[in-house]
Length: 248
Image (cartoon, rainbow, N blue to C red; front, side, top):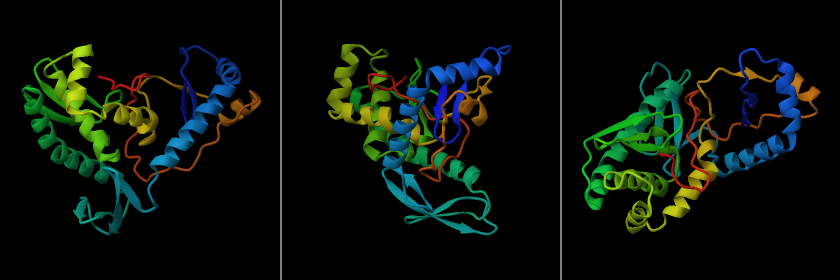
């Protein structure tokens, strides 16, 4: 089951299951659904930026629509964007900006921990904020730019530490703490607010419960207003593990 304040409640069932089964699941989990929606609404409010702006490393950039523009350009604290739907161009800009922000951080972090980065990739992972391959290639989610800058720095250090220690052993966390003493604070932020940066969407086959079905079950999952204007992709923001540590 997925609970999202924009799309409501989605229940994943086997292909031949009936909608009645979904209604039964929603009815049984009604209190939990309501708690999840309330928590997500609080998270959205916490990371909200003013209308007409988008988040960027803890700040906000003002959107300036321009007719005929196809490519986003930053001018100070303003983003010049297409006057029509700016989301595709915005995502492309965020990806470019993510590489510019992350590349020097990753190189510095790799040297600092005594590792060697062989490649850097910017992606839109569905389940990860970052990853480190056995060959030393680091990959990061561009949506990290929607988070505060110290959170981005933590994720970069986290993955750089995997260049030296590939697992999550005590040695690994000691290395992380040596280079990022406040890592617990930043991991906690990701756990609480990371999923609020963008709507989540799974690639799996879905059977959606309709509003009418949820009402019949005695529960409704009313959508809340979007907290930010940056919901650039149907793919989901990653989620941290339950102990607040980063998912690798």
